[in-house]
Amino acid sequence: ERQKDHRAYVYTMKHAIALGVSRTIRAADCRGWIASFLTHPSHQARTRIHRRLKVDRIYCTSSVEQICSRHEENDEAGPSGRPPLSPSGFLSGTAQHLEPGLYLVPTPIGNLQDITLRALAVLRSVSLVLAEDTRHTRKLLNAYDIRTETASYHAFNERGRTSGVLQRLQAGEAIALVSDAGTPAISDPGAVLVAAAIEAGVRVIPLPGPAAFLTALVASGLPTTAFTFVGFLPPKQGARRARLMELRLLPSTLLFYAPPHGLRAVLTDMVEVLGGGRAVCVARELSKVHEEFYRSTLSGALQEFTSREPRGEICVVVQGAGQVEAAAAALAAAGAALESDAWAVRGSPSGEGEEAGQGSAADMEQPGGSSLQRQEVPAAAGLVPAVLQEERALQAALASGDALPVVLQRLLGSGLAVKAAAKEAARLVPGTSKKDAYALALQIMDGRQQAGPGSKA
Image (tube, rainbow, N blue to C red; front, side):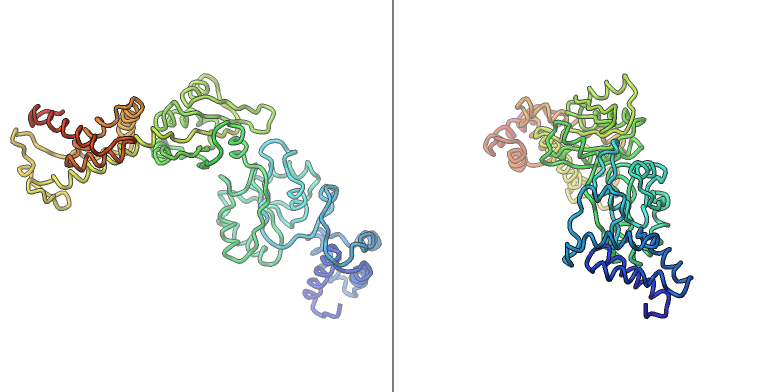
């Protein structure tokens, strides 16, 4: 009250009312501050203070006695601070005092009753709610009679709007960030703002709540000990298959989001890259009226959703790679690497290799007259089926117990010496000793020598 500057007076009144709301002062002091506010000689100052208090959802000018009586009822709590709120306090429609910062508030993925009491209190008490779609979020706020101001914050404007939001956060406001469904920044906008807030020293307060992929995982029946959340795959087939190739060896359960119009394409690529025998759970319309969990194999799911049109938000939970698949892929990768090294060494007759692909055709001539030229590496679209074909052949060999001959043929064909090939095969094939691998490698080499240099044994 003694401050002559109106802005300082506004700050003083905000702090006083905030302390009164938190009940760390006596109701009599709170009544004195409110009375001084109402009797301030400057009408302009009263209007400005009233506007700022309304922004903070603290309505103190309508009835001084009503506010003071509310504080007098809680005077018995003493100056120890604000006690825990009861459920009725969260749902009563009364705004609570919040610490300044960015609040990440999860929203229901379908059923509006899945929102938490704390989320309702935060949405009611912040000065601004940043929403992916304000029309969608307004339905949720209206359902719980929340009148907080909303502003759009989505993938198309997050870069431009972040600076303005940061200014308000640094000024001491409490702002909430929500998405249309689920937790913000999970396959939704928000990561840019969170990183900028942390860099600017603004406190980030995350609230626990709904997430569609976790809901699908726990009901899928697949292992939950280790899982990998992928989100949405790339829309183009080449990039999508390349991403699946990176994930095909992971032993953890894989979780994907898929749009209904693109589910068939996603399942087709999964069958091609991951194999149609993997278990899968296609969860759609979670927590809604038409909730469905379709559990089958990837091939079965592709057949099912080819015969009928998928609808709603979809989460695909896929079984991780088994031991046979991982071992076969490791064998194929090891053979490809050894073959590449062998070609680098055999690039010239002297065995010293070629520099940067240089060398004449005469240097590459074989006695039979055929030119020994290395084929160009195919494009990514053509490489994927070739790699998968070799891996599937190795998988069948491992499953039947005849993996050692196949592996030795692959290693010896890449130009590796007999002893080195036997050592590598013993490492790659479980339950194989170096002695057995060496004896079989000698037999293979003897058979090749008897067949002649021109054979493809």
